[in-house]
Image (cartoon, rainbow, N blue to C red; front, side, top):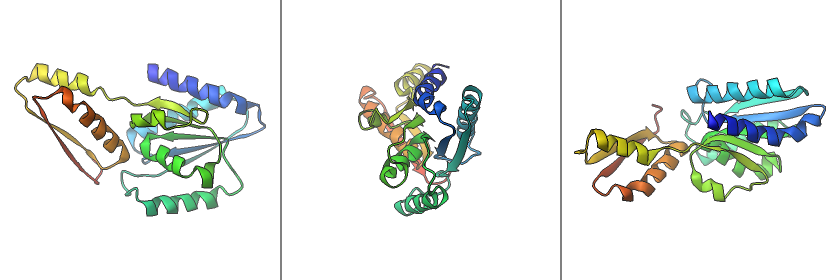
Length: 203
């Protein structure tokens, strides 16, 4: 609930100046497919909120990188960038909303060729290092913080004899950020050994 409230507050602050325009263009870019449950809920909540709270005409466009199915390679990024350049030629968005790490990184890498200086809001970002890298005047949103220590402590309380812990995931940027976060906290569990298993196939 707190995350949802914070996100909507952030969005309200960024979008309010645009509501005075005759029409505002909003571009949504999701890291995963439209049928991925978390993405679907984020999308529906976001669109529902702006439709309900902003009465000025809105043009909302949505794109899906689908990077649980397609490898997020430099070649794929370039082709997707070219596709957006062709599709939205002469129609620069007033605001970009992204979910998950791949979409945010794609927008950051494409800012000079696609998105210029438009504000970007995000949700579901796992790479906490971005807090010190993003321009606060242009990027804002909600990070997804995993309660790693709390969960491992809970595991130890149930099974104090456990010595090996396995983390299973896919090969997305989101998983990589979570894995790095876990490794950073491994020093606090010196009696346990962490193992990481991942591949490029969607779970």
